[in-house]
Image (cartoon, rainbow, N blue to C red):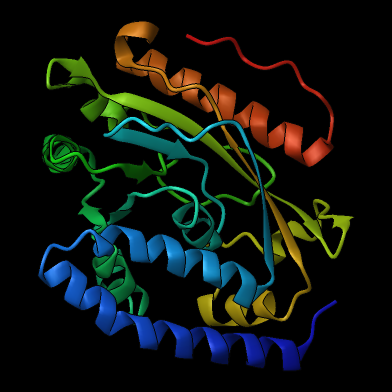
Length: 266
């Protein structure tokens, strides 16, 4: 299942391809070109092939701009998977800026770096609102941390504060998204094997990345649920709860393969 040769080849090609495109993206961002949004999507999709990732999608990506996409978070691969599906920038914690290599990639994709401490809620909201008002889509992981891939942690309602505002007189559109690592080499990815993909707690990034790169073909199931707004749900807390529920159902559906009843729209 795991191959040292495969890991070395994949990571070498991934690194070379990334270094080749960094100057192009840097130029696009510096001059405000539309390419700055299009290139990351192309780049992430090409990384699917380089890293042996197969993405299966369900539902419809919101075509409205701006849209705040909220998803569960269990692996750094979430960035590559969602980045290839949605023309958007990510919302990340400020510490990401200091990460070698990956911090550079985050800045080049125009990620919004926020301090997620409780006393910084207003600053977070204003930073996100500014980008949404500019018409930019954003991807937020409202669990606040990554999980083991077998469950969805509660969504922090404070991270939805920007959804209480209006843009151009309209409420912010929020689309819940379920991301599930469901299969490996044509077989279900069981409970015991999911930590090979999920990165959480105090796992070492380098060792985990090497192991992951040596795996076979990975199936990721992504489900886009109907968009909602705060007025439809009644409150920010209710919106967070609704988003968590539909995302959790989507993950359970992908993990078990059962046709679970969908959660009604708010």
